[in-house]
Each structure stands twice: as structure tokens, then as C-alpha cells.
Amino acid sequence: MSGAMLPVPRLGPHPDRPRAYPPDRPPHLPIRPMWLCRACGAPWPCAQARLLLKAEYADHPIDLAVYLSGLYHEATHDLFRLNPHDGPTPRDLFERFVAWGPYRRSVVE
Image (cartoon, rainbow, N blue to C red; front, side):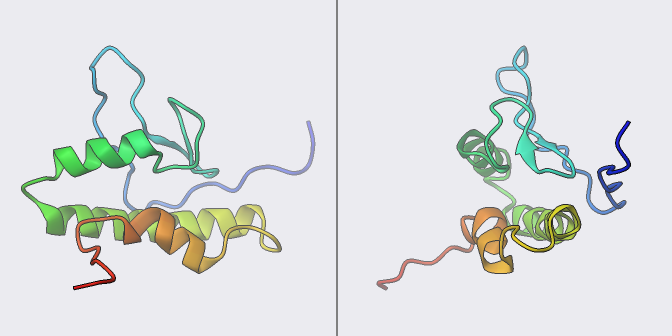
């Protein structure tokens, strides 16, 4: 076994959403610490996870914003520890985790 081991994820918010839909399919949850989708392999939150999260939290947008912000913090920590030199930037991770969420505003108002 190689001496390079993946960092152990911290005990921040547990990524347990979105729920599997349909229930007999693998859920679109992240594999930590790489933050890839378990179901499709895309960077998490993948397009399907975003749709499911928006539907699941439709009546609770503040809860979704808090959940995504916590996972953004955890992902930033995990991904920086995995690759501190050429991993995603904080701005890229913000766009990936938070910016698409319930408080996204149009450029033109």
C-alpha cells in the first residue's frame, strides 16, 4: 500500500441529501473527500442532485442555503487537502456549491 492516503473527512454537515429518486436508484450523494457524485461520477452537486435538492427544499429555501454553505465549507477543506496546488479555487467551489441555490439573483433586475 502506498504511503499517500486520502485525508479523513471532518465531522461537518453530513451530505445526506438529496434523497434517492426514484427510491430504487443510487442516490446522487457525494463521495468524500473527492466530492464526486456516487450515482453519475460528475463533480457534486451534479445536475441531478441540484434538481432534487431544489425540489426537496422547495418550501425551505433558507434550510437549503445553510445546508449548501456547510457543504461548501467542508468541500473546500477536503479538496484543498487533497490537492493544495492546483485544485478548484474558492470562487469555483462557491459557484459549484452555493451560487446556484435559492438566493441566486438575475443579473438584470
